[in-house]
Length: 213
Image 1 (cartoon, rainbow, N blue to C red):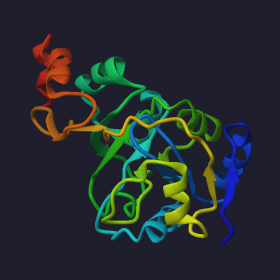
Image 2: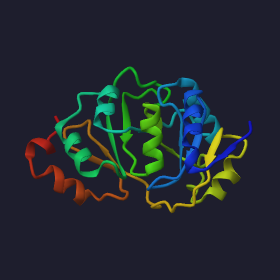
Image 3: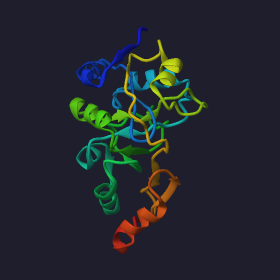
Image 4: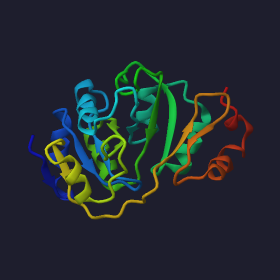
């Protein structure tokens, strides 16, 4: 496989790659990520293969907004809408109950999926231009540290991904905060750029938002 190097101005080429079940690496406001069609089993499998990631480890999705989230997930609690209003686009991943449209291979057979609306203009534009949820996994080989630059991504993935954006925009470094919204109350699964106090400040203003059951 030849990895094509793209400038941010060549985003339409990345759109074509996505529509052909290909893989694209790009920087986000958190870390570098690998995007592919999150509804295509073939595209998802290509991401797993490139990363050497065990298929027992689920991946999350980039979405454009809660309208797209509603197409992918069921029984979305009111608190999720409040958090999206407060923190999307941004470094917050919400775990929600998935619909059948989300392939089981993406979630390692699980019944939930993590969704994030990226603040990165490049990532968000790619989601909106394709109209698809895209894989939002980090651009690193499985078990290795997250790539922090274009050079590191190329060193790891040249010949393994279809395209990589050449973009020196700095990433935030911190991963997204992951909050599980499928239980009786929100549960922080990973602390990232948004703190537990930030989340509580939004949800505890209204007890109906805090209680998800």
